[in-house]
Image 1 (cartoon, rainbow over the protein chains, first blue to last red):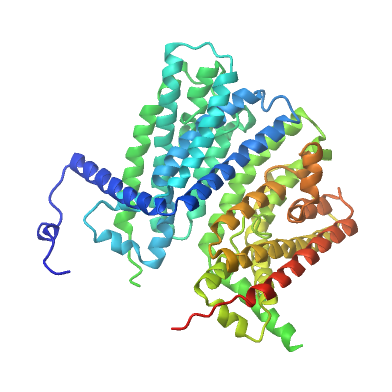
Image 2 (cartoon, each protein chain N blue to C red; image 1 turned 90 degrees about the horizontal axis):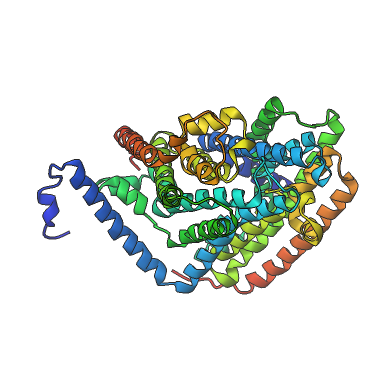
Length: 287
Length: 266
């Protein structure tokens, strides 16, 4: 590189958390825009993979439909109610998957040493890893989740109040943020484990599968685990059961249904700490 | 005799290759166990509402869950075995080197895939199944002969699974890009193998169709042999027929494809 670019003169100016966040978002936006342009160079291929993504995620709803062709209720819940749970969980997970779905490649980057190239670039590593190979085709999952949610809202007989109406978009967004935090924490774990992206899958894909079914299906200990330990229940179970007017299997006060944004913020903070710890512990393979 | 030893060592190589990834294997075992747990509770809820759904009692349904988690990677329902590598070799043209080798392309990859399957049976199959047997009431047979019959059905399932993926890989000779076909095969594999839900539970004509397709050889057939809900010999005949048809198709496609190979110099 001839003529040192300006940023090398002052490599890492002191920054507050706010500047760092803006920096990260800017880098994320630029990298994702680049990947989108490259995707759109092959529009037919994009359309096909997006459709494939849609079809692959629709399969688990087809499985639910097949189950309901044999039974009227699962865990005491009818099809519209399960569709509501499914739609919220699917959309929230889809949002996180679109934004951060590439993070499970981190283990491979650690193994083959290509993470080092990201470390020397003057942009936050998290933003670079998250935006790497940004795949717009993952919109397929969001569209599928929204369609099922739309169906559920159309057929459900809910006593709507302003609070309940407000809670639906809040649920989707904070659910997306909670899943995003799980993605980041999972990636942080891969700094240490390197070859264990499947562990991350069991919390992300496994978690969203779990949330597609009513909590009454699962053992009490599992419900406790996803409420108090890995708070996935705040993605949809707690707020959705409030909207549906159903009791939560654990004894919790009703206002808990409104805490997802708080829980999402807390998850982000914890995931951020985990990410920094992981990054600090990173030792290059040197290859 | 020489060729048998060649393919045996290729299979051993396939085994060793996957055995190298110990952390990945442990992570996979964890994932299979988590998904097994989630599915087990869903199935309990289903079979509580409709006992004898699909001809299974609840213990059989739960056995189905844990056996399907144990077999998922063995028969490579979602793909992810040799075919990605073969597609890459076709795309880059390295396939020309393979065709020069004094070994048959199809048999070479079949041997390698058998080694991979054996590793996944031991490495990723046994622990989730043991976990399921420990924490749930399963209907696993005590008779070693039934287990032997099951292993035969698993082996045939692996061959059918291989022959499907071999066809997928060869399609790259014409399409150059295997992503679309791989994705379609994955969707078909998950849906039609009985991974999501036992094929016996699929209603009406849909059920009859999925049970007649080759993918039912992968999970549904071996599990039914182990649970004693299917006649082993009939099952073997079904699996072997599909294996024969698909392997022959692969062979024909292979010879058509090799005539198309364009070797780029440089």
